[in-house]
Image (cartoon, rainbow, N blue to C red; front, top):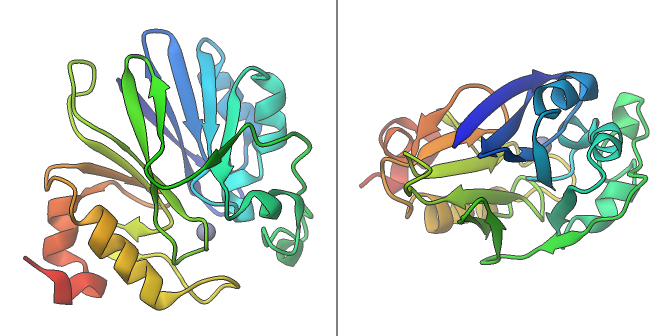
Length: 215
Ligand SMILES: [Zn+2]
């Protein structure tokens, strides 16, 4: 499995294109749609997965969906409505007024799995940064050399997501990380919504926000 990270405007969120044997899925097309489309143009794009619906993670969604009409758009059941509300998705605050022109094909719920290239993408509901924040986990297998976690704005390298935006909850984000993420295998490689990769082991050891949960 190959993972390509593209930092996208306006504030440098990470968009990921994950591919295997000619198929791919895209996580968080936050902006710079033409860059994302170019990077994915030779793949059969099956899904567009959203970790949450803040504007910097969905800003390129309309153009990317148009370029890959067969790709299924997947969003948390708790944030489906945010796709259509510039107030809720925060785009209004930044002068974009983003509204999704398509429909959400899949409403994500905790514990669901999505089939992809002979493996499964596991859906983890991790509220806190936003009510519907979602992480995606793929177990190590013949086609995937590491356990992979796409952590959105829930877990970062040495940090965690902000909880001071509307719908944020500082207690819930810690619970989500402790119960759903730190219980994953230590060697899991973490691909966050901003900044650099990390691993579950590194975050258990060094993340100052998770000190009290160190093994
Ligand atoms: Zn966010």
